[in-house]
Image 1 (cartoon, rainbow, N blue to C red):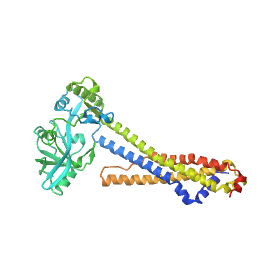
Image 2: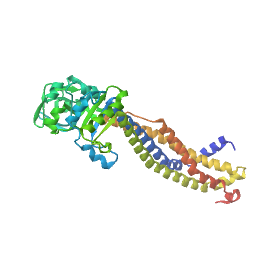
Image 3: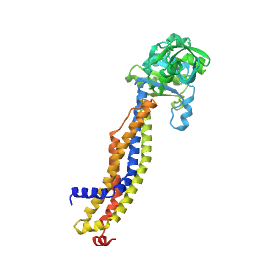
Image 4: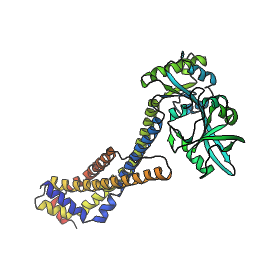
Length: 417
């Protein structure tokens, strides 16, 4: 019997029981849809996060307080107050780190803003420099649409000046011009000197919903702290990053009287380090979710095997008649195995289509409604994997029913009632 004839015979058998065939592949459809959706969203999340990290620039190095987290027990160490003014001054000295181009400390935290009768909860970011008026723009690639950045003299003088994000402007000022207006933070008046253009997320900071002030002002009048949450360092070139990281460690260890690197109360991260670690985490989570979704494929495969066994029993006389007319055991086995593979392959195709549609809809919701800047991503590997897995499930779980059908005696089969 030719493959073409076997294929047509298998399709005829499936069309004879359309409702049962549709119900049979339901588990496969759900499983493949879930896998496609998870892989697409995982890819989208990875692209989004890596894009935010890269917003800082490849030459930026971050210094964080506490030990570098190696597990859940180390999370508390992130909140140490180990980065002080002395560290900032040491890093600005060329003798300690000649390949450092710019240094900016930052402090941040939630604040409630008030303007006349309007209030709004926003994120405060204290930054700036004693020497560079444009350091925030250089590091984060954000610039005022109207107005200006606060200058180095205002940073030194702890001036009560602020730059607001686009969402803060809309929430507090509506359609009116906020420039040179006064808003209150902790009962203190701050003059609005700049308004940022709509930027969205940059390295986990949503600049649309942010208030920028000199870090000296934030420490003295708003947050009441003498330490920094981060120190951002810009290397003179990408080639000098490794040297800069080493200089930072040597300088800070000397400041903190640390001789054993295992006892560091700070850690240094490059953009490449962060990207690699987050990529690993996202990949691990994606694989975990895929393995959970694959359970439905196992259930669907068992369902296919069960239905195929029922089908073999119902079509016993058909099997006997075909054998009596010359069909071999391999012909019968190929027919029923092909039926199972066709069923699961159809389920795989439907699952891929539904997965792509749902992924697009979720991406649309995240980008348009929640405004996360999420881009739709559909990895081709997901479609190939989905189709391949569905066909493999049909092959594995259809093998036993097909074998049972091929072993039936033609005489006994023709006598079956």
